[in-house]
Image 1 (tube, one colour):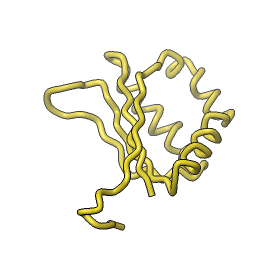
Image 2 (cartoon, helix red, strand yellow):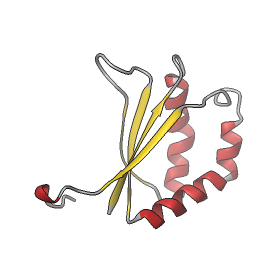
Image 3 (cartoon, one colour):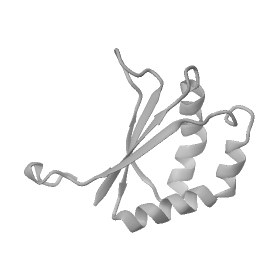
Image 4 (cartoon, one colour):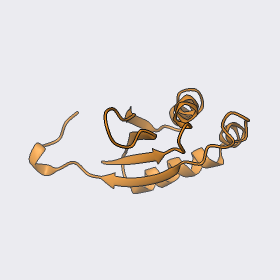
Length: 108
């Protein structure tokens, strides 16, 4: 079991459109392709104000690679990226994978 954390740094002013795209396009596609989204967050307080962070649980790295391949090849994703509201969104994306720390044990 691994968890992938993905951080999207949007251009100033683009976070509302980025979160809208996640709510109305990305999340349904994730569901259709078997992604197990464990949570999503936007910042509060001081610090970066234009970020979206989310976590996806995967059985292993092969499942993660296959899931992303299917998502990126989905014609619905290609169409959505080119709609006027979303076509200018080009966030800086970082992705890291994590495994549970053994000292905490496993959690459901």
